[in-house]
Length: 135
Image 1 (cartoon, one colour):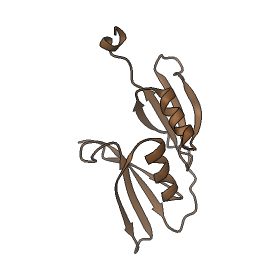
Image 2 (image 1 turned 30 degrees about the vertical axis):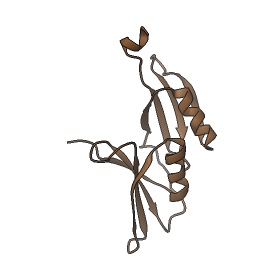
Image 3 (image 1 turned 45 degrees about the vertical axis):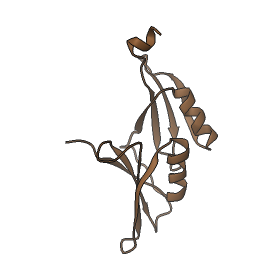
Image 4 (image 1 turned 60 degrees about the vertical axis):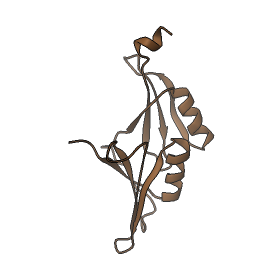
């Protein structure tokens, strides 16, 4: 078994695709309209969805927006450098809601950003390996 995808409902699919592709460097893997159901599904990610978990962006044509509720937390993305990743988001009009720094009660460097619908995305900076620490 494996995690296949996480689904997020989005108000404006084109705006969301632009954010995930430009600010986060994901690729649109597939997109399909379902006219009878009045919705579109778009799958984005960093690699083939048979090998990696991806995001499913669901756009219901007749819905202008959503309340996120309190049950959903965030999507986490591992990055080489959290500062660089946050700068790319800011350059592309995204919001950095928590600048890079050590997590509370730990040493891992994290940051939080928001997508156009307000979903929280955590950047987790990849820890240096022992080889990298000595070079």
